[in-house]
Each structure stands twice: as C-alpha cells, then as structure tokens.
Length: 246
Image (tube, rainbow, N blue to C red):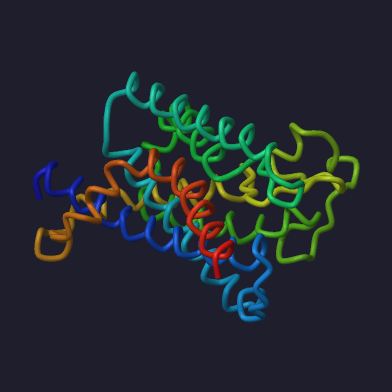
C-alpha cells in the first residue's frame, strides 16, 4: 500500500470519527445547553458511545504519529495541536461555568505528540505485539485514576496527589476541578501508545482492506483540526437560531 493511499485511508477514518464526534456534541448542546430532556443521553450506552469515539481518535493519532513526518514536523504539529487546545480552553471562559474546558482532548493530543518524541527511542525497540499488550493492560489498570483508584478500584491512591493544576493534568484530578472535556495524560497516554504499536498492522494491511474511497470524509480528516475548532461555535449558532425561532 503506497503512502498516499495509506494516508488517504487514515484521513477517511478520521473524517468518520469527526462526524461521529460532531453528532455527539450536537446532542450534548441540545441536552445541556438548550435544556431538552433526553434521558438516554445520560445513560451508560451514551457514555460507551462517547468513550468509543474518543478512543478511536486517540488510537488513530498514535497510529499517525509513528508513520508520518520527521521530528521537526512532529514537534511543529504537537505544538500547534497543544496551542489549539489552550485556545479552546481560553475561548470556553466566555461560556457558563458548566461548559468550560480545561485539559481537553486537544491539549492531551498535543501533549502526547510531544511526549512521544523522546519515548519513541525506547518504544521502537519493543516488540509490537508485546508493546500493544502491555500498553493496553496499563490503560485498563490506570482507568480509575481520575477518581482516586487504580487496578480496577482495588488500590486507592493517596489523596495528597489530587491537588493542583499540574496533578490534574497528569490524571490526579483535584476535588474542585471541573471540565466539560477532560483527557488527562493518565490513563490516555497508554491508549495513544496502543495506536503507536498498531501502526505496523496498518502498514501491512493491503489496499483491499484499507483502500477506502470516501472523499468527503477524507477531506474532513485532512482538515480535522480546523473543523474541530470551528464545529462547536457553528453548531451552537445554528441551534441557537433554531431554538430562538421555534
């Protein structure tokens, strides 16, 4: 599979995930901002939908990181995504407190892109299957870290760790912290690393499997950052006009 076809496929998958995310945020606005009572959206099924979509984005970012660009481009892209995350956080200060964002997904992705630069020197020496298995297990073991536990709730962490902005960024979420979109380094860095170790699988798949032809989604995938930054104010604006005049 050529590099062009491979990246077209990754862009296409990213476009599908972006559409899924936009739909999720559309419903989020309808329920939480415009007050429509839809109990399903607070159900465990909706929570699973959200986590699957987010995990897909993070996995795909890890896959893309390993197979794309040189170090200079990776540094530039990491800084750009991280700065975009902070821009979103700053813009959210104009919103009500319940809608503000700190340590959102873009902040995480930008951080992960930069952290992977030194980690790559170690990880590339690890067998891909072993690396995928270990990173997947670590993700599951650290899943409850935001709430104060690890190892499936069996190990309670010292509460002293859960204070301050830096610790919240790492995953030790302080008691007074709130964000409408929160992705800490732990445990999500392990999901990103899972994507890193999945990259050789993507490289080995043939065009019959990955040669997806869906240009509108590929276009969205190629411009995912700008679409992500613009979609929420556009969705909010359209919904505002709809609810104002109905």
